[in-house]
Image 1 (tube, rainbow, N blue to C red):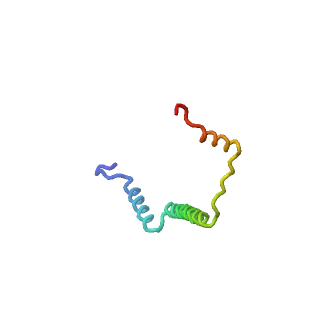
Image 2: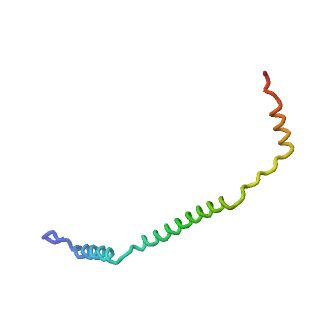
Image 3: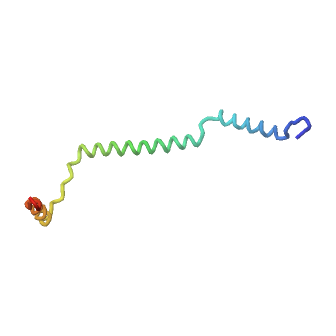
Length: 87
């Protein structure tokens, strides 16, 4: 520091300011470009999956239910046929 109060590093600060100005003038930020590309790909993937899901819902036949086993049928009939105790 001089007697006048000037800093020796003032030239360095000026260079940093100039670099910051140059970055603004150059164009797109590479981080922003990568973010936009990745975001676009994710969005395209999600939209594609949704469209595929809608197409499958319209065109594929409904899912067949599994046949109920005889044991389960017997249990269900017994449950329905037996009245609750105390009635």
